[in-house]
Length: 294
Figure (tube, rainbow, N blue to C red):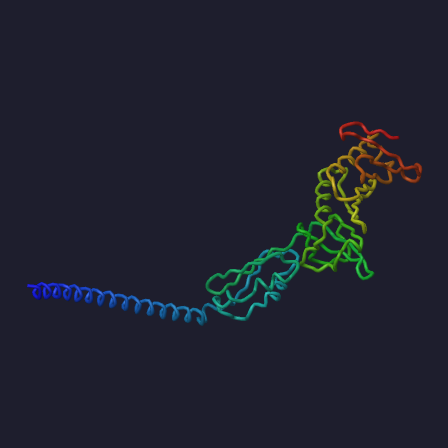
């Protein structure tokens, strides 16, 4: 009885093992077939890519340059170093935009392809915001600055429509390198001052001077010089300067040689030489109050 029961159990186990083996064989055959299909698909894709990569009908024969303002399309084309009659797919691997970004005038560049044979290069040039003037190596030099404070082009002289930031040589820690931010602490404050001065026509500054001690001074033709000192409390100092210029019915703007608000608690103004040589102080506890002369 014991042997028969043991034999029956063995037959059941053998049947289950055979069934499991057949199922695994079918699964393996299915996996092998799927793998073969995948390999075949990869070979087809490689063949298609190879056919496209070497297809004579997909070679770049035309290049279009968009977005230029001061640069010419020919300059952009030459700086990109576009290979002659290269396939469009290989063209996407060329470092064209990296070469263009090396030009300080170009902020960034993009490329795209148009089937069957057109390459499009789109450049965005840096826009002028101000002019930096400084003496380096004993020579007066001028650089165009964009809104991020990046010098990107040298000039023979500043354009009339742009504000000028005149920096003492000691205020520039390193040589000016085109395409790289200046990395100075006072430049953002000078930009802030430009933004404040542009809100009021009377205080619209044509020139900002930065001395060796990083004191700021705002200058404008036919207007008194506004000495602001350090860059702290610029909105308050500019409001005080506006109040001083408005004193005496606006006549002070023609009488003063300069207005000094470097100490906001004690702003002073100096008459023009023809009107006297005494420095006068004007006090104001509030910008809205009248300012009187001592």
